[in-house]
Image (cartoon, rainbow, N blue to C red; front, side, top):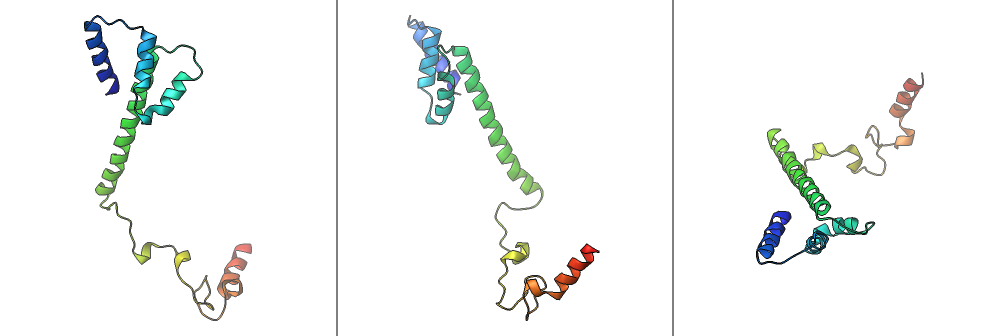
Length: 134
């Protein structure tokens, strides 16, 4: 974790009689973060005059926990698929496609798939609509 390695470095420097202010340590920690923490750094630095080391550590811990939860939940989704007996690959079978993807010939009805009329003139659709109205 980032904070543990940072704490180890600070401890080593303090053993060499280096003195730091906690606010300076907070700024050093924020400045040493990776690019994926840029939004967190901006959020912490903007809107506050002084930044404490403890609030930076708390923010980093919560960000790490959220990231780990996302990793666990995404791997959990794959496990659910395997438990249900399905693969993660996309099914390209025709029977899984919706009817709207089927190619219709120019004189084929989109509702009953008979040739000779279109959907707006379909007698089956009209009788179905009349049954709903009654």
